[in-house]
Image (cartoon, rainbow, N blue to C red; front, side, top):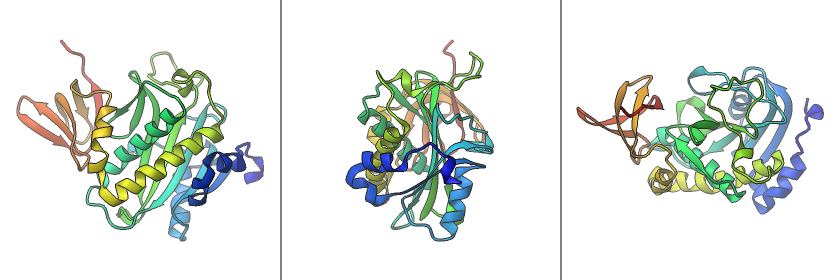
Length: 261
């Protein structure tokens, strides 16, 4: 199955340098879902740092069951298995820590103007650049499969009214997929180590510094509907809203920017 993939694992490992020893990278030309395949490997005992790159996913999914559109030349989609030394008391914050890691990695490549949207998106302006899907093995944050979909270029075939962006909009020259993956994995190792030892509290200020909608009026739709001024996030990853009824803490939902009257 791997013989048909054009992804160069050796080039990605070389770009990682000494950090390559922390990862076991595999790549496939096609699968239904890299998260599903990696969850199976996790259940079979795969080690922390196992990475599965999928050039095309026939059933790739995003958060809340949404599909993820990707094309081999224009996107980077992969899943990472990460095992933590102990159970976290704030598993909802893991996707925020991952988002921060991705921005750190892209900034190391020279990208600028990338913001974070609670709880699991990277933005350029108001357009989505990348998405994150975290799935826990056995429902506990001792072993997590982290799915990441990043647009290298804006996907072809999308209508103009779809708010999607590509990494090429934030860089003077777009690196290879292998170099991008290496930068992301290097940042993930550093950030997830900090999250595993000190929790999200050690990362919160840096996350908020990149929060695209800090201080703006937002509407939360989904599990908990609310409107208010976005005050950022707590140490547990909850979104804090200043509403007419007082402070609201939101643990799940989609945030969409509300037009100011």
